[in-house]
Length: 152
Image 1 (cartoon, rainbow, N blue to C red):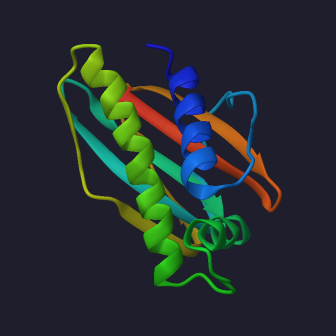
Image 2: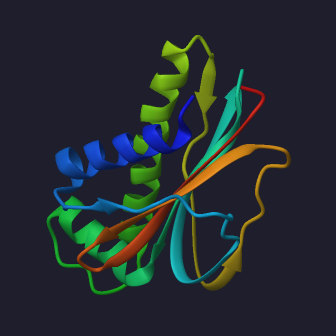
């Protein structure tokens, strides 16, 4: 399974059809990112034939811009609307990845979205997992989409 291709295609499709923002994918990062500052992260757990997680990590300014476009309203602070929107974006991305895995014969379930927001926080990755982190650029900045899969 080409994790980078699946993440890139899913993210572009969702941003074109649901968020209505142009995005440009970058080359996958060579190492995972664990620390975030002034950011919002939406996280979905994956269980079943494949275990892991999907996350979208957005600086506050990018999270507000995505939410503004997604909800069609002005957003000037990171609030519940923003965390809900980033969580729903993670949910849509995970749903797309779940569909790809299911079509490949892997029975996978997804958790409800969790959202983390803060001045500074860190996230550990799944041990011994295959992973990819793809950066994307929008007018307001850059965000990351991360997929980690184990036992696939």
